[in-house]
Image (cartoon, rainbow, N blue to C red; front, side):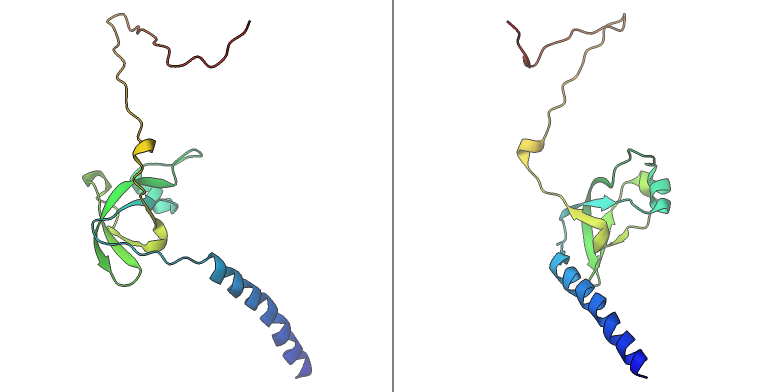
Length: 131
């Protein structure tokens, strides 16, 4: 019985270390309706349904709108028709809030391709000079 008590005491220390670490790293996520979130696609089944797979695939799929909150940790998202095979309810750990920063928006410049499949190159900035 003494050895069992010693083993129980020795098992308490890693448990307390893990608990203290999880308390420090834990952050409560809470979203409102009409918020925009990114959807994490780390599960293999979801990756196959979404159509993104491979070494350089994205971790999060485009911004989606939250339709309603279901329970304490589940949210229903508005999904496009091409993702109809994916269930629209996700756990809060699968979501990441979209931070709208206007400075991060990149303007798309259209490239006009001629009939002979050539285009005119326009320099944007001079990166290096040599004298």
